[in-house]
Image (cartoon, rainbow, N blue to C red; front, side):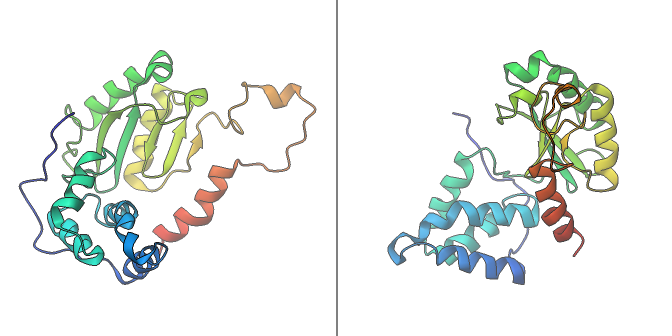
Length: 220
């Protein structure tokens, strides 16, 4: 197990935004009074969504909310690799799946693009501080490999060209997730051209959810 430590440079304070604080309190109430420390993972994840990473003040703030010793919150944050203990790209942190199916479909070339365009080192923000990257284990989208994850969004069926284009879009805005070949789901390419199956939707469910929530939240 890799030893993970919090960053040497820390902000002085942390506090949830008004809306996130309200959300956090509602999450805590979902658990019995003697089990409310179970809310530690969702609270940590919301803190990371707000700040981009998990700082020492954030750990202490959440520990106080849940009446936990800070070291217990730190144990959770340092155990799960989805939590970043140092600052990552302010605009996007790109997680490139490097497990066998994605590797066979070209993920190594995506990693090389990350090294050339973002940083030679994983989790190190680019010179402008907007993007960072890391190689991760399977994220469960093997049928649409190679795939990268940015926050809660998946970008699938990538090529060297479409991935480079995705990096350009991430620098400027919030590109639409899903298949970059415009597949409906994970059906064989060209399936709906030869099938009599009627498609009631012109977008898959993950894209609909993104358009309904992500853009709305990011444009507030």
